Amino acid sequence: MLKETDQFYAHQEEPNRSCLLALRKVILCQDSEVSETKKYGMPCFCYKKKMFCYLWTDKKTNEPYLLMVEGKHLEHPKLETGSRSRMKIFRVNPTEDLPLEDIIEILGQALNLYKNGIIKIKP
Image 1 (cartoon, rainbow, N blue to C red):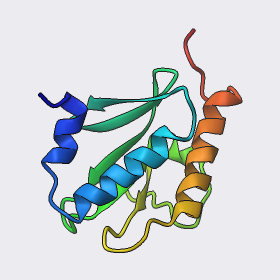
Image 2 (cartoon, rainbow, N blue to C red; image 1 turned 45 degrees about the horizontal axis):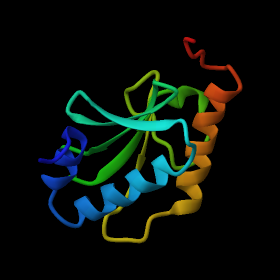
Image 3 (cartoon, rainbow, N blue to C red; image 1 turned 45 degrees about the vertical axis):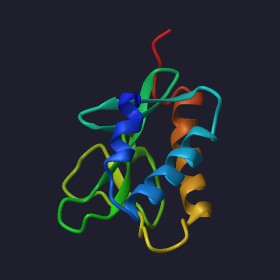
Image 4 (tube, one colour; image 1 turned 90 degrees about the horizontal axis):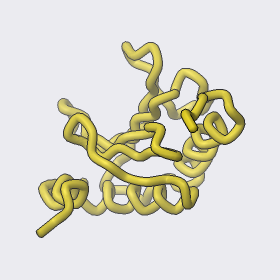
């Protein structure tokens, strides 16, 4: 039986499935304190049990994206704010190689918010 988090990926069609699984691996490899759960029907990644990003697909384009919970604190030219006040998204084209440099930079910025105490983590 598949874990709840694995079920999300299993139900995705290609090329999104492979793209989302690759993103999952990149996120989980950023720090040993990063864990995965499922919230609001989508994969949620936490740092020391505090949510920091999600994986999802755009309802209009069906393309995957990385949703950064504390996006308002992040600066990167490829992050989009849209109508959100707190979060920002990073769109990924599932038919191209992942822009790993951008993704790792964004994830690093986000994790540093928690590590440096800008975003408080409850003990």
